[in-house]
Structures are given as structure tokens and as C-alpha cells.
Amino acid sequence: MATVGKVIKCKAAIIWEAGKAPSIEEVEVAPPRSHEVRVKIVATGICRTDDHVVKGFFPDINYPVIAGHEGAGIVESVGPGVTYVKPGDKIIPLSFPQCGECTCCLSPKTNFCLKTHMKHPQNLMPDKTSRFTCRGKQIYHFLWTSTFSEYTVIPDISIAKIDKNAPLDKVCLFGCGFPTGYGAAINTAKVEPGSSCAIFGLGGVGLSIIMGCKTAGASRIIGVDINKDKFTKARELGATECISPEDFKKPINEVLAEMTGLGVDYAFEAIGHTDTEAAAFLSCHLGHGVCVLVGDPPAGAKLSIIPFQLMSGRKLIGCFLGGWKLRDAIPKLVSDYMEKKINIDVLITHVLPFEKIDEGFQLLCSGKSIRSVLLY
Ligand code: CND
Ligand code: ZN
Ligand code: ZN
Image 1 (cartoon, rainbow, N blue to C red):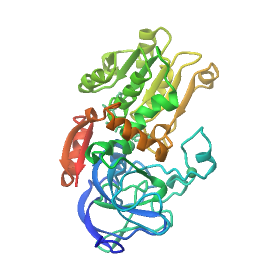
Image 2 (tube, helix red, strand yellow; image 1 turned 60 degrees about the vertical axis):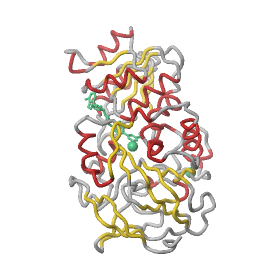
Image 3 (cartoon, rainbow, N blue to C red; image 1 turned 90 degrees about the vertical axis):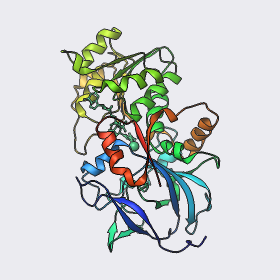
Image 4 (cartoon, helix red, strand yellow; image 1 turned 180 degrees about the vertical axis):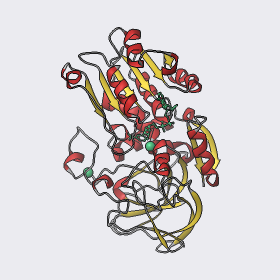
């Protein structure tokens, strides 16, 4: 290809500083270095975590930055040492790597690869440099994905090669929302047939948790959200009941306890507030209920729990990206989608040209969208 080894100029959405809306700019994207891949992103979803970057919730993130972590694209070129993919392959950038060699990758118990960007409090490539510049300034990466750029550079341990026939405008949701929620139910909670579940927050992540609970055979799936507009889709996907905390005087955990006897078998928090995390934990059945934290509270937030509530047998756990070892799991989930075993299309409520990214964020923040997919 004519672009191999050269700097590519393309459009990207840059968040110049925390609190500022992303602005569409022309960026220069340097060629991939050793064990890196340059990808042409075709489609990207907007996840709430990207909005947290816009709002400046993560003090470790440096600005200016290119956010975005729910994309799908095609390999443009590969750096030295890359054998896993070649130009033309369809891929999904992974916001969590799977190096396959570290002690966590070798353990079946976790997907927390130790080569993660989270081990280094910086948002640059693994060699601590950036591939993006704009108006003469270095631009920072985000989660090694930065899918809000038409071309992006990603470490080869952070990509999944997928079916060459996969529709990228749909399967971009396998970059975060769907596996994050679905895996929280299937892998992390390991929901059992006949069990009762409560899902706090019915956005793209929460609805995917509902799909996971339904697949696992849960008999009661209770959706909890203050935005009742979310109830229709939640019911369509498997919620048996939906409630709003604002309709009750007493705490929502007491309401759930009354509805279920002594609390739910599994509670999930997919909002990202410590007060709803505490409520989800207290909604669990005394003695054995399991609460899974999925939402992303602002950095530095602390959750307060009375030790007795854990000692009595309730469990509190959490997961990134649904606990999947992503490089192994994402290609299989995409195949399941191609074979119509799972349906993610229902989560896509809006499709917009990339230039309308700001509208996409507004739709998310006003509660009008589940997922907006941006097309380059
Ligand atoms: P989105 O904003 O679409 O959904 C959140 C839902 O929560 C909305 O429907 C709100 O109406 C609802 N809500 C807000 N406040 C309350 C409240 N007090 N009580 C009840 N409901 C409320 O977000 P999303 O689905 O894209 O993401 C959900 C969370 O998951 C968010 O915190 C995001 O940052 C996080 C996340 C985690 C991970 C992971 O790997 N663990 C990956 N991506 C996103
Ligand atoms: Zn690893
Ligand atoms: Zn996300």
C-alpha cells in the first residue's frame, strides 16, 4: 500500500483539555513501530467511559488525548515482529491486552494481563512515545486503542483478528459494551439457571448484562434505572421487571429484598456511582448473594462496606471487559454473532457520521441513546 512506512494524515477527535468537547482535527499518525499495528478504524461506538475522559474523571489521563475504545477496523500496516495479523485483516482493538505470557495470562482465573497500560500511569504507547501529532503537538493515546481517530496505532497484544466477513459497523460493539456486560454475568458472576438478578443501570453495558443473565437461565431479571425510557428495551432483552429508585421512599436495596424474599442471588452495578454500588451490594441475598461491580466510578472514589456483610457470606467482585481473555474470546463472540447465536444490533440506537461525534456524546448524556455508532 502507498501509505506503508509513511505518516498518514487523517481526521480525529481531540479532547484538548478535561471538560472540553472533542474537536475534529487533522492529525498525523506515525507508522507502527516494533510489535505495533496501524489500523484504519471503520466504525466506533461511544461508551460512557469515553465520556468520563471528556469530563476529566481520570486524573492519570494526560491531555490532549484521543479517546475511543469500542471500534473495529482493517489493518493498514504492521511494524517489525508482528506475525499475528497482516494488512487487510479485520480486527477489533482491545482495551485490555492479552500478552499470553505473564502470570495472569497463564492463569485461568483472570484476564488482567500484566502488560496492561494500567501498570504504567501514562497514556502513551508501550515504548512511552506517541504516534499522534496535531498542530505540532504530541497527542496522547487512550487504552492503546484511540478509536476516535480514522487511523490509530495499537500494540499487537491488544488486537483481536476477526472473521473477514464480519460487518464492522456492528461488531465494533465487541470492543467494549457487549462483552463487558455479557461476560460480567457469564464469566464473573457465573449466573445459574433459576437464579434472581438485579441490574443497576440499563445503558449498553447493563442491557448486555441482562442478555447474559437470560442466556444463563436466570428466572428473575430486575432492571433498575432512574430513566424509565430504558425499560422497554430492557424487557425486550429479558428483564422480567423494571423499577426506578425514584418511585420508592425506602432504599432500593430494601425494595429488592422485599420483592425477592431476602435479596437477589446476583446484583450488578453498571452505572459507576459508589452509592449505587453500595445499594447493589446490599441488594444481594444475605449469606450467599454475589455483587459484581462493572461501572467505572471517578478515580479516587471509595466504597464503604461493613465487614460483617462480607463475613456473613455475601461476595463483592468486579471485572474489566467482562473477565474475558480478550484475544481468545472476541473472535469467538464475533463468530457467535455471525451465526446469529447472539444479537448486538438491538444495542445500536443511532448511526452517525464521525463528524457528528459531539451529537453522539449528547445523545448518550441525555439518556436518548444506548449506543451511537460513528462511521468514518
Ligand atoms: P450509560 O450511561 O449508557 O448507562 C448508565 C445508566 O445508568 C443510564 O441508563 C442511566 O439512566 C442510569 N443511571 C444513572 N444514575 C443512576 C442512578 N442513580 N440509579 C439508577 N440508574 C442510574 O453507560 P454505559 O452502559 O455505556 O456504561 C455503564 C458503566 O460501565 C459506566 O460507568 C462505564 O464507564 C462503565 C464501563 C466499564 C467497563 C469495564 O470494563 N468494567 C467498560 N466500559 C464501561
Ligand atoms: Zn499478559
Ligand atoms: Zn467501555
